[in-house]
Image (tube, rainbow, N blue to C red; front, side, top):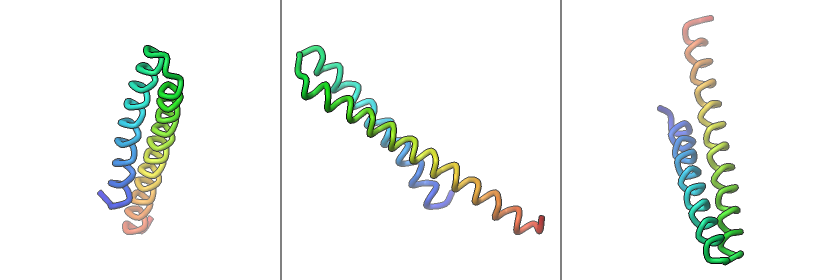
Length: 76
């Protein structure tokens, strides 16, 4: 697995973690009536989603590049 693909996979995982953290913050903020914590949780969820999607896109691009490189080595 190439470095770029590995980094992309790491970003996907970190994004999922950030989304979970944001969900917990939002729930705690709602339960305690802390609007600032609730809003921070929503932002963390959004940031986590974006990070995961960017990592997923990078991983898919890397896979496509690797497939094309293999094709060109075979002479197709």
